[in-house]
Amino acid sequence: MTLTLYTAAVPTCTRALNNLAAFLEKGAAYAEARKIDPAVLLNTRLYPDMFPLATQIHIANDIAQGGAARLAGAEVPVFEAKERSFAEWIATTRGTVAYLESLKPAQFAGAEDKTITWQTRTSTRNMQGTPYLFHHVLPNVFFHVTTAYDILRQAGVELGKLDYLGKPQAA
Amino acid sequence: MTLTLYTAAVPTCTRALNNLAAFLEKGAAYAEARKIDPAVLLNTRLYPDMFPLATQIHIANDIAQGGAARLAGAEVPVFEAKERSFAEWIATTRGTVAYLESLKPAQFAGAEDKTITWQTRTSTRNMQGTPYLFHHVLPNVFFHVTTAYDILRQAGVELGKLDYLGKPQAA
Image 1: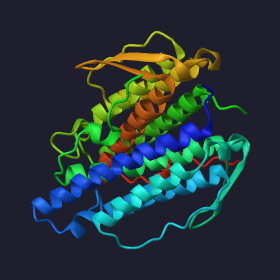
Image 2: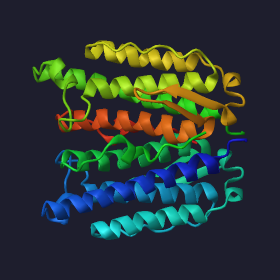
Image 3: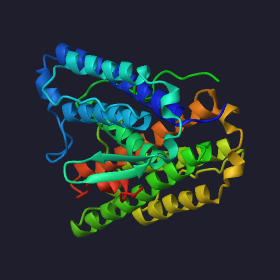
């Protein structure tokens, strides 16, 4: 079957975010069992000038959602910046998955060569669809999901690689 | 331009590994400037039962190289497990990039639907080419490059997101 940007973007990001939601549930259960204030865990960082867990989750969601929307030519949903509990972050992440699943493969037709334009805090960026997905969206989504995992692992949550990768799929 | 598994796999992994080699150079320079035994930094872990930096680099290289080789139908090179210095890890990583760049787009024709079979420590795994790339190879490569970055960041190496993502590309 011919590879499309839809296949490269949507199932890849939904899988990563579903795994994120599932290991956040383990993080929340761990905080409860160990009587750790969940807000402390959500504010844990690997280094003082790195983002805390909550921001890692925020960025993973925002880039997956905004990235897929831009490639699909859909209106880019605003990802609201606010404090959330574990339960709210998990629901938000599952909401992003539902949004991604609402996009149709046909919306991604021709996205490979489309110029994608977006605004960062400091500048306007442009990339073609294919490098935008492979050199910006996917590396960022995986970076922030991995760093969320690393923060929870370092905090003592019992996670393994399969929590990050998800259940193996057979051929 | 039609998207191919070659485009999804090779430039994505070479970019991730080139960035890894570049931020390992910063890690080596940091160890030297701070008179930190480089072997200590290469053995640093985020948590006692997580892999140290050297193994993160090893797995990122091994999965990128083996993954691309399997998708290309090429013989899978053996990735030698041995202790390496920072200079050797950087050269090894650049060697993986050179290997990936030696593969030809035509070798990936039809890889989408090919059953990829590989051996883990405990079992034989099978996946179709497309999910093998998007749900196994890329998530693993980014996981281990990110965790290498996270270890160096936590050790105090001055890295920023652009060290992980590489220089922005214009459209």
